[in-house]
Image 1 (cartoon, rainbow, N blue to C red):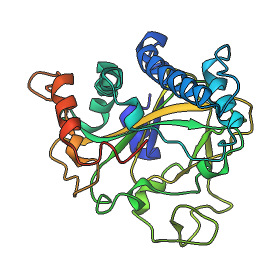
Image 2 (cartoon, rainbow, N blue to C red):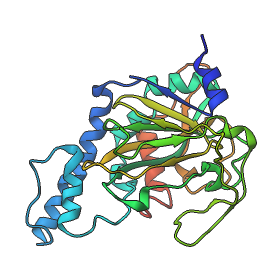
Image 3 (cartoon, helix red, strand yellow):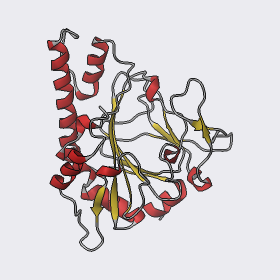
Image 4 (cartoon, rainbow, N blue to C red):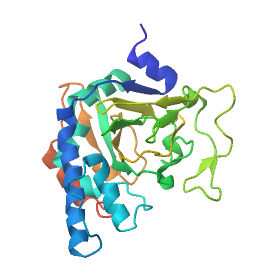
Length: 283
């Protein structure tokens, strides 16, 4: 039977089904819900919206709020708003780190990069083209940087799933350029052809996706009427240079070989955050 390591090495990505439980995700979802509630209250008091949509479920409420104030075409990748102990606990969750350990060993560092992403219905600006993450992270193509991606709702063909080109990480970083109409730089040569298999990932809430910084992937349009909420964060083997990346200031050890534990406390990471130069640069 093929191991997770073998699957990951061959494909450049790995989906682990039911890696986390509802309880594992509940605290971060509560943080996100609190942000939505606070923003709805502010907008209502300002007279920008006429309803706080309090009765709507998690996967619908934020979209209704944005529609109510005609802001649904704005890109919202949440960073500062969701910084919390709940986020830290998920980043350093033993179940997450156990999967990473099986791929890169037991000395693991969190790279400091995290986002909660509300992918709104029919929002084209979050419908990303084919790309490799190292194209947007300078000088990382020669090291291993893994993204952990967790859906906070079920991901189906209609609500904006991720697609991957398995094995595409083996060809190294491609050349990128900017073209009219694209927000992000795109590869000069298309990574797809008639003989390349495209994997579309349907995932359940609680599944975990981990992928290599050189594997080609993209995000499809959300054609449903719900928000495809997700959270992602990045890791690498301890000691890997972060090359002055913007999030380096809040990188920290996540697991050490000797103890098998996370040597960083929430208090330590919060102090790093408070001292970091970028903590107020993002939403």
